[in-house]
Image 1 (tube, rainbow, N blue to C red):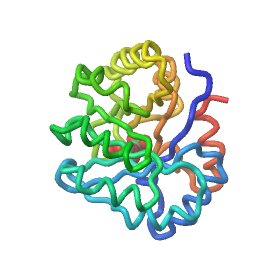
Image 2 (cartoon, protein in one colour):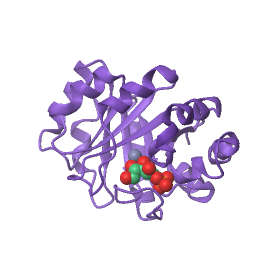
Image 3 (tube, protein in one colour):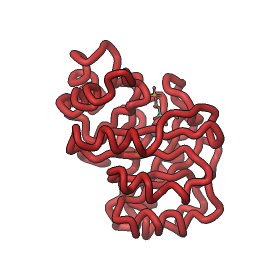
Length: 220
Ligand code: DX5
Ligand code: ZN
């Protein structure tokens, strides 16, 4: 069981008109990572933001920017997100037939490489890239929107990946994303997750509640 749980608030639920202030407030509220949901209107139905927004928030926090790319194709944009100041760049297993090459590209850009799985995607191919991933993201909703319900069947996938990570002996974050609240956070942690993404649950009640929201998710 992982000892230290990290909380990664997703700025998808932020007030975009004051995004810098929102990130500063999350930083002050002890967020561990700032999760940035990039959507292209093609891989997922919605369009959110691109490298310019990553670049804009980079100076306002020293926390790692955890950039979740829900875009396809993905390879042509990796260098732009790296240059913009991403620390972790996560791509989807479903977004490219050249997964190993894309993960290698992220590493060669000097960034941590993450690999995400949609709820319907099996993890069989993971064994072939375990030596180069720094983060594995299990989607507990179908990507595209905040505020959806946690898909309980993914707990088994989290448990399976936890065992694979422990066998690998490498330090790999096991992140969950989608429908995380104070209850589902406990389930995800019990299954072996050690990084929780939370949009709705982080921003609930406005900036004066961020610290409490994050602390409750962490479970301390
Ligand atoms: C979903 C995104 C999530 C989303 C989570 O496509 O990847 O990061 O913001 O939002 P909540 O926590 O509200 O489910
Ligand atoms: Zn996300």
